[in-house]
Amino acid sequence: MLDPITTTLHDVQIKLKKILHSGAILCGHAIANDLTALKMTHPFLVDSAYIYPHLRGFPYKHKLSYLATKYLNRSIQAAGGRVGHDSIEDARAALDLVKMKCEKGPVWGTLEAGKEDIFKRLSRTMRPKRHSSAVTDEPRTGAIVDWPKVVSAYSASADVSIPCRDDDDVVKGIQTAIRGTADDTNPSAGGVDFVWARLRELEVLRGWTSRAQLDENGATNVEERSSKDNHYPLSTSLAEAVSKTVRSIEAIYHDLPPCTAFIVYSGSGDPREMQKLQATERRTDEETAALEAAVSKAMQGIAFITVR
Image (cartoon, rainbow, N blue to C red; front, side, top):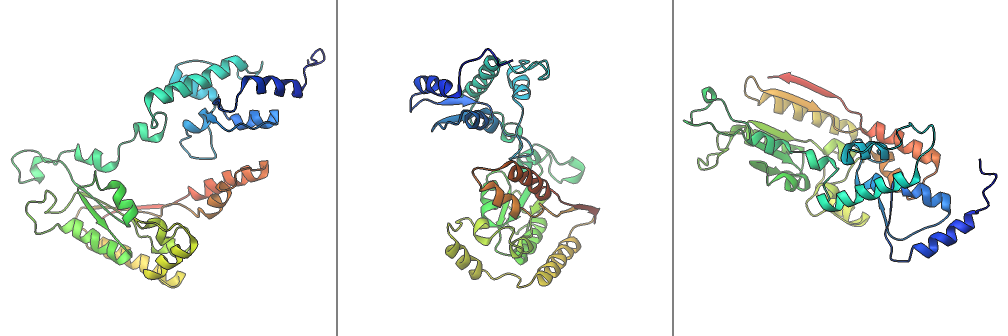
């Protein structure tokens, strides 16, 4: 097929250098692959594979044909790759996706675009009158009980926000959110309908996260993180942390009102290998495969559901 072609890679590089000045913005889809093949680099890139992130997160990426169909209502690469890609068609699709992103805003094409946090959704659901003493319907209420950095992210939408420093605080915070307060002016004084809370000591002890990452004013270096972690001593051994987590779950369960749904979810799997590989800027094929396996492992979890 390429027998009559006399253009060399060097010829292509020279041509591109004439077109691309140092301040030009280069748009494409998975453009790192093209630059690797061209043996070139460029300082300013916009990659549609990254600005329209995959549902499962990095390193997964959407195909350009999928994005074109979903967001541009355009069918490209219709032959399924059997006759090759039309480079002009692909380039136009990638550029149009970038233009659409600029027009619609940074959350367009991301999970955030179609996502409503659970507390906002809860506020649009009314309590049935038979369960309320109010004359009119009242919106359901929710509480977030977690460590400071997480609580601050949801404080605007949750009716009750309770920042915690350890798992004991979390258990007490859940009890406070369920029982309510003595403040009659508070719409959640009689207790909330839904509580989201996390026990984090076991996660910290296993090295899956750190105190600094969970505090509102997180540490920025190893020494500061160590200092913060020591300032709030948690469980000292894995066995102790597991036992404390179990005791905390039992205490929460026994304090629930009758007919309350209780869901316990383990959270993520071990994320450390994933985080280590994600920090690598240039990956071999083997490292990319390892990262995909690490992401899959980190996404694994288990849930238990019961009714008090």
